[in-house]
Image (tube, rainbow, N blue to C red; front, side, top):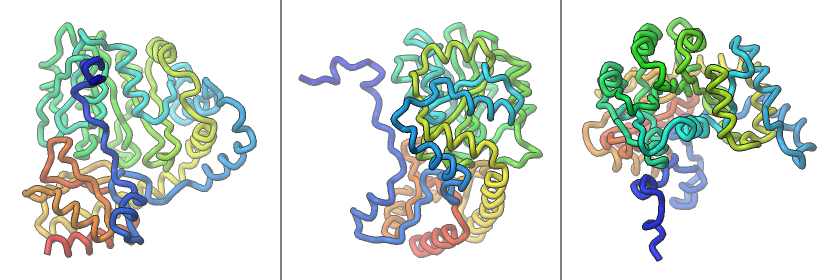
Length: 364
């Protein structure tokens, strides 16, 4: 029996998501140690102390189900950003929410718009529910919002916009997004995926919650995996108008956020000093990466995230493999249609020094 023959049509065309190579796997494969991982845009500072304390206080209650409604976390998000708790939907990471949104609004007769070189979960989710994918050619590696508008028709249900964009790091300013939203029909849901928003300078950061007051079809997704350091706990949130949030909560799996994640998230949501430290390291080290690339004649895509994408002008797979042998894990992105590029997460100064040295050796 070939079970692929009876699978959902969209699933037949999918390949499993390829995450960044774990350190443990490279240790097993090559028998080396002292490995650094700059592949998955993780927080290089580790778990915040505030989260550790919150987790330790929760350990004795793990025989109980978590709070299905996430009351404390919603209250913390509400206080921090001035939104109402009934606008908030919690997810097992923002990926969970991106899928939840598609299941809520789209089916196989509908179209979903996203950009070329955008987060790979968008096409994955679209195909999994048998919806029609409308991938819009990128503009300078980023979103072509005019192209998005031209693609909208009466079958369009969803638009995904990552800002900053992963894996390219491109960024859209508030005026651009505002002008775009003003032209999108109210019946089309626009998902603004802000997984990396904390790494943008405050002076240029999009006030997306203000935009939400103007546009009822806007959904904002954020994660605590990056700047807040909770990637392993899988926790994220979406903010929308209350009617849309109510629909999400009809589809959302009960207890989709575990107790440890909820407790840690409440703590780090109030830990502004930690997030500021992470963002400042990213700002300083990003400048070093840009300087390194300029000195070595390497072309890169200017990034507002916690990663930089370098164009080697030739297949990057051999460079990736050679870096592995030096004990440095980065991210090949041929699966995004970018076979000449590697995406490199911004680490601590010592980790970045190691990457610079390894890359110089590999490039010879």
